[in-house]
Image (cartoon, rainbow, N blue to C red; front, side, top):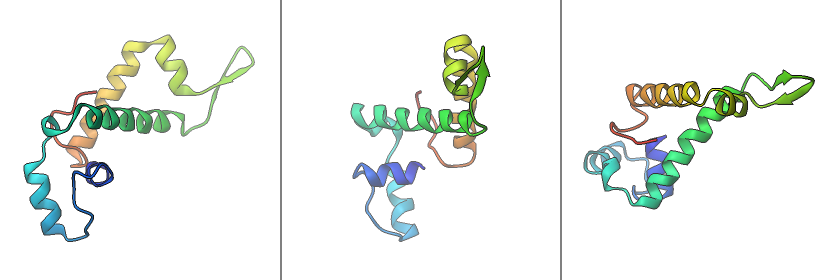
Length: 103
């Protein structure tokens, strides 16, 4: 995910050469990104987390269907935020994101 985002924003060369990619990733950190790139990455992570929450389908409340992510954001904002932070941690542990990503 981190590599794809950097490539899409022009911060990583468009190549499949693993050595070239690893070399660039060694020198690019989250803090080096522009404000717009940081906001874009944050939006991407949040969208992916929402998609994960919504993957089981909507929840029915008082006869109406709602996305799980929307309900969690509005009913328990703290739990939503904690879940988002746990999701980011899992991406960092899996090596899909660099450390120190702000969401």
